[in-house]
Length: 183
View 1 (cartoon, rainbow, N blue to C red):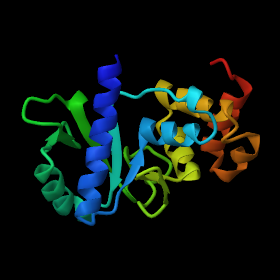
View 2 (view 1 turned 90 degrees about the horizontal axis):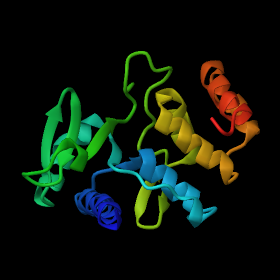
View 3 (view 1 turned 180 degrees about the vertical axis):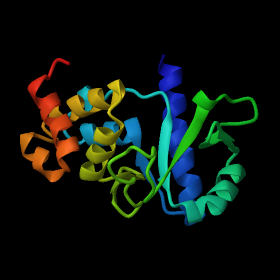
């Protein structure tokens, strides 16, 4: 298990280093962003994640491909999902998944993904800010997204006052998580 966690962390750091060296704006999103923010409150509450998700502007994709390929990654689009496989024998599970800034991940989403500028420096990474991350997690609303939000609630990173920051559909999802902390 330790090796798997280290591989994900290494993939994340290699990605950030490659994009930064090439001057490609990015933000870490997903489980790694949740972990980075939860760690600012309680390192013991951090949950491991199996993949790396980054936010890029679509116009920066060609530069990102060049930078990532120079770092040993292979660009692919698998079933409509842009990703960088971690080497020639890697599977989509061993990849860096790309979400595009200012675009909806799915047509039914309430709003588009945030811009990469909605990020902050955390450790040696550009991490999406808490409000944008919470909004992304509320839009996705999968089991793992709700778990990530409960983790953020559990350490006090967000609270009931956040409900009114979002459109009613998303605010009601957050309220439900607050009302049902055990799932």
